[in-house]
Image 1: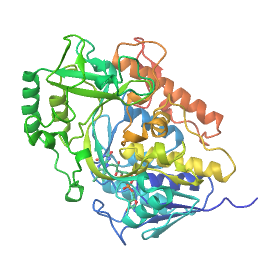
Image 2: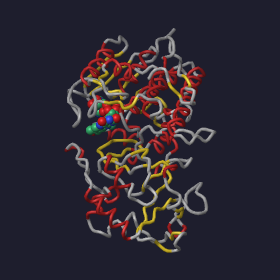
Image 3: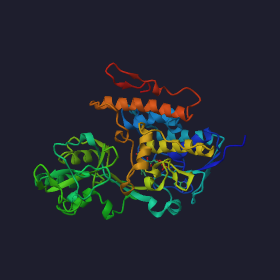
Image 4: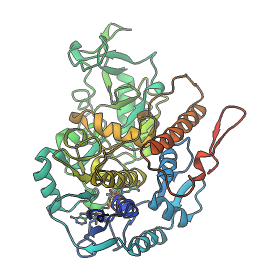
Length: 469
Ligand SMILES: Cc1cc2nc3c(=O)[nH]c(=O)nc-3n(C[C@H](O)[C@H](O)[C@H](O)COP(=O)(O)OP(=O)(O)OC[C@H]3O[C@@H](n4cnc5c(N)ncnc54)[C@H](O)[C@@H]3O)c2cc1C
């Protein structure tokens, strides 16, 4: 039998380490290129693989939390990063928080001791398959240039300017109304009433909102994270400070949006644009922001109709190299002209430690499949991982922004369940069953027994209680 083809991984962060491990497990010799310590990024401090650049938590382990569900799916698939995180776990309730040094040391040791993986220190400046490019939000300039040359100059952005996303079911239909400005801004699939949800404000409401917005506490990032604000991605709080009417003549412009309840234009209107095909996620238009998370909750809940808003994603503005995946990549996140030039991690447009690792895991699985003549596969959108991939495949390329795991991405249940926790438990239960079925279909089952997490039980009240938590 001929040996499995060798592969290159660029970037020894969370996604790259996971991808390297998955490929080695499947018999491929791997060369893992990590530029540190020869060259470093503005955020990393050590030469270790899988260094956590900021917080030390992978967030919740509860399956009724989106990050917890994603972790359970990754556990089924056999994630090295999660195994190392469990080994370096520190007390943090149901969150998977780690001793960052012990965690990165454990990943580095596991990768170094894997005979099929060779680590090469130094910057990579060109793209050649078969490879997984997992160079993260702080991809070096030379490689970023090579990626732009390969995929097209508009494929790679250097900053994100993210507006919050609100769960549809938490928006008050007694107050918001559907309309498109002058009935014109329609979009595919929108009903005749118009594409946007509109939150009308009186003068008093606008004034109170503006006062709260300009006084709210902001996040101050690292120096390198200071973003040169272009008009199109200026934080809403910065625009608000320019003058009391700046927002009313900008994103909160009320003209052409007649409130059907009053028959008049409001003093100001906050618009929400549909983010996903199923209409569960709504983006607050023009509200990219650096406000701290509790401040985003407090200030945005002053907007009429959003008093009980459930945030599926918070706003942020960062230095972040990421691809416009729906426009530039295939559904399994490879270059369109070469399915063995794959991308993984934050550079694909996912956001967060767990999400980045998850795409590294699937990239490893898929590159191994492609190299042995099989089709790449993606889990169904009833799973959190499959739902994230669907977002990166189907999101509107004109408005594409990085996305974290959240329940708004996942297919709804056929039945209506009002209790939120119970509903999420049911979605999680379905997801883990479907993930296992998907793994069986494509022969992705681990050699040993499946991890405990699928052996959950349903409580007498109908609540899902996985065995592993
Ligand atoms: C400052 C900052 C703070 C963040 N904080 C959090 C947080 O608290 N929680 C959270 O969930 N997410 C956070 N993120 C987002 C994201 O989850 C992390 O950046 C995560 O580490 C991404 O994983 P990754 O594997 O895609 O990239 P990384 O972990 O950054 O790994 C990429 C690796 O590629 C290497 N590299 C880059 N260019 C080259 C090249 N040309 N050749 C060879 N190697 C190269 C880098 O040195 C790095 O080791 C943060 C991001 C940033 C920038």
